Image (cartoon, rainbow, N blue to C red; front, side, top):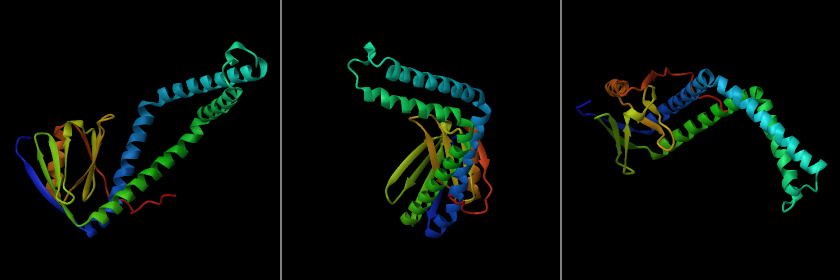
Length: 223
């Protein structure tokens, strides 16, 4: 992209309130997408990790039990408090329980992850309403998206080549991608259809996967 594309978005309390449910949809979309990718690409590695962790944990339980009960006067005991081994055994027991019941624990972890996503979205919506009214000016050019906030005075630049996927709702878009410490998780406001089309084309040109997230039934219960 050689020419600049600019748009300006006025964030009022009304706009912030309307975007609240969209934040939830975007955050949950990302959570679902990440989980689906993990299920299809890492199923075998997770199974191997489970059995490896279970084996190592049981070996740790057996070793600490042997040191505590069978050979309390072993040379390795010297210089260490007995409490060290007494505390180590419950640690290995907990690990063995986690790895052993991982298939049953995973759904609970997934539900917890979704609740965390909803809470993050709601906190973002509250912060946005408190900061309103303010304006954001965007400049899209040369494979990057620059956002300038007048009050408080902030400027952020996102290299679109680092964006792996993006979800576009009615008023906002969420950009994801990258690896630590250069993780991309950026919110971009979309005041009209022209800004949405321009951002979608720029992201696709940069190699990102772009998805339109339809509006849901409203705020999700946290549980």
